[in-house]
Amino acid sequence: MANERLRSAMLTQGITVEALAEQVGVDPKTVERWITKGRAPYRRHRLTIAAMLHEDESYLWPDGLPDGQRKDAADAEVLKVYPHRSYVPAELWLQMFGRADREIGVLVHAGVFLAENPRWTQLLKLKAAQGVRARILLGDPESPEIQRRGMEEEIGEGVAYKVREVMKLYRPLYSVPGIEFRQHRSTLHNSLYRSDDEWLVNTQVYGVSAPLTPVLHLRRVAGAELVSTYQQSFEKVWTEAVPLER
Image: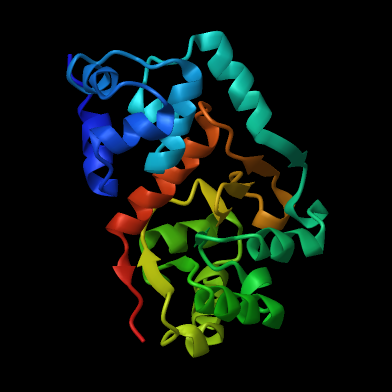
């Protein structure tokens, strides 16, 4: 069975069979068999190819790792677990985003603690000037999801008010090239903060405000699926969200 994911990824990146074969150190006919017959390369080759194509190994070869190795890889992605967001060192947020070379992503309802920090907005401008793409997803204050969250936290219109205030704080960034803002109406199961392959995941717990809920500090490991699951969630929300009215 042909590996259409591999074929598509090569076309997207403009990488030929010959170029891939040269980079990996195999015969072009071997690469052809990987594509047309769906044969799986050795693990070392899969890792090299995944890096070249900017794809997850597990996406290109879903059956490439046995279950035991998948679990070990997922465990390796967890750097630290904080019982409450307030326990995350204040400097870690900016240090993590400061390490971004390609992508910054934020998925929140409001994320007041970030938006109120002038160093955060300065960092976004700096990273955008360096060619880093920044995508910020904020909740729609008129949405039933925001209203429900306010009821769950017993603060009524408080969440919607926070979102509107954050939108005002971000206003100077709306016209900055490379920084994109969208509104979402998703049920926010986790607040997500991405810096390339490093993530902070602020879990959501019913009836508990975000500063008091656990945070996972993650970093992608080749062949693992934990980070990629959160990334897929982020991308789905981004696709369904609408550009923020300025």
